[in-house]
Length: 217
Image (tube, rainbow, N blue to C red; front, side, top):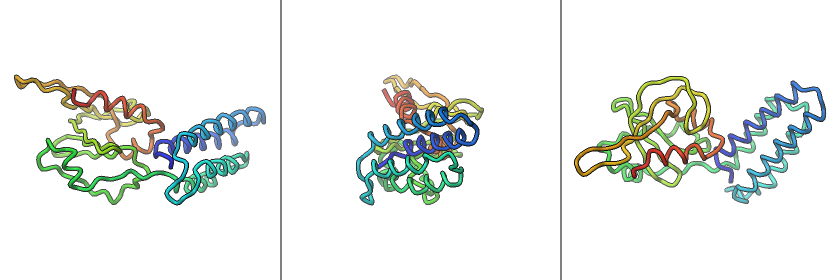
């Protein structure tokens, strides 16, 4: 299975290739760009689980996909159709039960869990929501860990998680509590809209580094 962020990377590379097809006239340049795109997508397939939930071989599906996009006349609409078919190979985020969520945030009293039905879990690398009343953002990772912190302000800048320029907010989490009642907070700027952030993630390193910053020491 492909991870959501791996699918996002393939999507980005595909649309970049389509743009080259329709803006570059030099055949050797176009072929070189396709070769680069194909190499990276094949590398993603190498790292993926070999078989999807519907028993399709990911590697075979990727090879068929690469053959389909090896076409200088490929339109954006055709690429979107191919990507929709490829999305069936994406592993959906496993959303914990309400009881499991409360356990992940056991230090939070009266946790307000949002409606989740509107989320396409194949787009989700991490699940998060903003709680306006407390100015908090809650995050759940794929392995079931829960993190939360305060959010304040909004500005256009680079998100620490997805590494894209977005409307970001300052996220601060308590990372150390002293016996004398003192505490330390750490954080950085991340997307205010976590759904958009998930759609922009193309690698997991940004998320991993962010969680390292905000975890309790």
